Length: 438
Image (cartoon, rainbow, N blue to C red; front, side, top):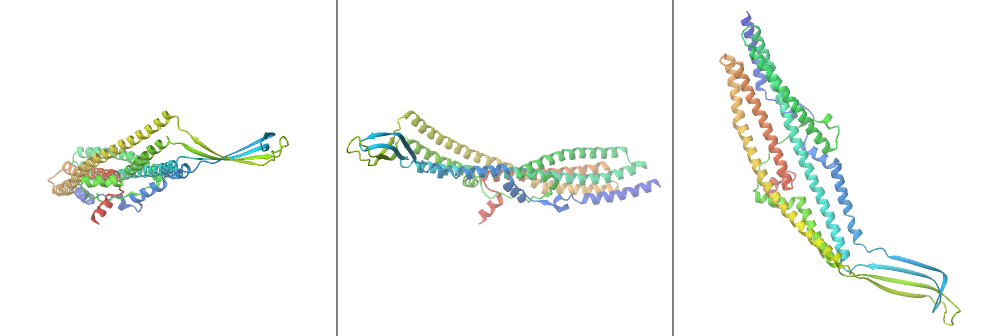
């Protein structure tokens, strides 16, 4: 009687096991109504990040400097009142009124305005580069969070199958037809999965905190939904074409071009500092009649003057020229370093992406289908009594491990693509595909 009950319990447990095994773990995006897309995350980062907003405001503030530095200096107005009259040839001089305007050497104001405009352009490009950095970090955190969610879903599904396995193993052990080792093995696997789940919870919290900081949303952990990703795009351009695209699209490269033009203008301005500035002065003398001499009739007087600022401190001016030349050399060195960095980064990221896509293809087309077939064959053998629990559990563990490996490689592939998009200066490789197709 016990054997019949045990066999019945085993068959029922085996059927439940088979149903749970054939049902693949659904991504969280399919079992929850709340989905947070990557596009929504990036929009939040662009709109809410305070550091990015500060850099944009700084660039906007720099844009106002051109009008300031290219304007003429304010005129100087001087008034001199003499309490005791000063006897002059025309009479008693009571006061003097003077207005003076300085005029920089022609071209200086234009060069200062040009340098300020280029400086504002450089600041705007630096803000765009910072925005691209934030987007890349947000993508990395998003893909990491997606990987963690998929692992958590797989673990929960595997734990459900282990529960069915434990029920069957306990039923056989209670009637003396199964070893206690099977029960202990299940308990060990559940403990290991629990430890993995604890580590995943910590990784989930870390990725969520990163996204919350980038999006300036402290409540993100309470409102976070499921994440959804698409298949990784394929590369449609060679490394040479990608390098040309990066040099055309990277904001850092545009910022260095603006800095190079500003440095050239700085050299020209430093050389123009050797030329004198001019000043024009108009004076009015308030004079009243005086009886000291017969011709002191009190006629007011006017005077026009011209001043010249002579650049005699040649050491200071020569040092300014040298500084401007060194600035141009520094910008050229930074441009060369950026070119080399982009070139080497493209080569490394393309290699890593090719390797990851090969691993994905191997897992998706060979290993996972083979493991699925092996598990089904082992399940059939277990149903006929030609396979034991250890073999069935091992088949399940193999499929579970390959599934988590697939999610790991997929997340790595997506992160590599995000880094490549940052290197190329584009928001998505799919935009590059559409441009190439058009």
